[in-house]
Length: 483
Image 1 (cartoon, rainbow, N blue to C red):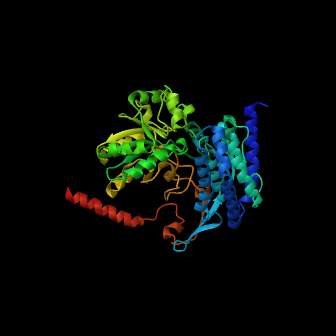
Image 2: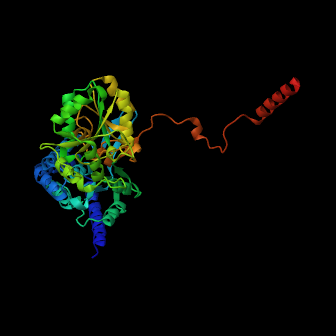
Image 3: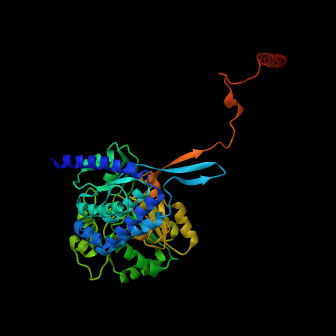
């Protein structure tokens, strides 16, 4: 059979089977749901190292140890964040309003998985789907099919052993664009979780199905003169180097306050940052981006050594990231856009107001709605950034990579970060289990209806005809009297 036809048929079969499993799972109790999810989280956690290595080997992206950490986050940390969430029966009751809110599952979730974070995203989406009493069918990226399907299988086997129906969790093995399109548009698919490149996310939003999508994260990090510079330098370099910049919330450009820029650069060099000269910067422009502005996927998720060699220059041993000093933002400067590799743009601005404006320009160049980072100890400056930035995650004095996903901050742990309406998505939330339930309202009367609601007349009630005549004559008389 033709590969595309085989993929389409597989997608149809998996959705149909998942829908049958969902009919059973939709009747599960909260105790059953939580027992199954706890088993899934533990299975994912135990498989984190093996699947981290497999993901790195299959895709060629990132660092196996960092992928292990992300897998642990996508399993155990995500489970801990939703463990106490009620997703069955009455989930809220407001006695004063005599209102009950009742959880209702959506059905079959179509889960699109990126090649940059394949196994951790699979763990995460499996957990939030099953916690909300849904079934889930995964569509891997073609370059991450094996590791994605093995992650899904680990979740599926654990769920079945704990009492969930078979094929509640499954993964397309014969991956193709037509197969993924069939998965998203199938009549029994209820909702789409789209994490991946912009074209796939746009395709998800165009299916006519409810869809939660992500957007590009062109994340600026402003470092104010009031910041703890040593901590900022250590965190920025480590965050940009983490898994070779494959998380969408990774820092993409430093905006350094002019009085501390030199000191910050010195401290970043001590942490393994290499600042490029103009010739090397130009070489990186040509290497990272194609003439049409699209990114060269051959250097995505690669080490600084690999990227520098691809660009044709040598760097000192121990270099972790490449930093490119820039002056322009926008179409005329490719390096001002998202770079999912170990290359970080560098700008200076004199004062937080100028830093604020430059940060907004960077966000508007390709990261609307996503994330901004600020390093400062001046609460006035911090709040100004929080109020003014057109993004839905403003992180203070922490790593972009781990802060935005909720590992080092109080935002909801998630591997799918909504950019809101600004970024073309339905929400700016970190997506989690409560986004995958519908809520029914059971509402008692609290206010009696007005008397007019019981009227059987076809016209609105009004004055009697003789009253109308009296008032008319009075008005006419007044008019004639004035004349």
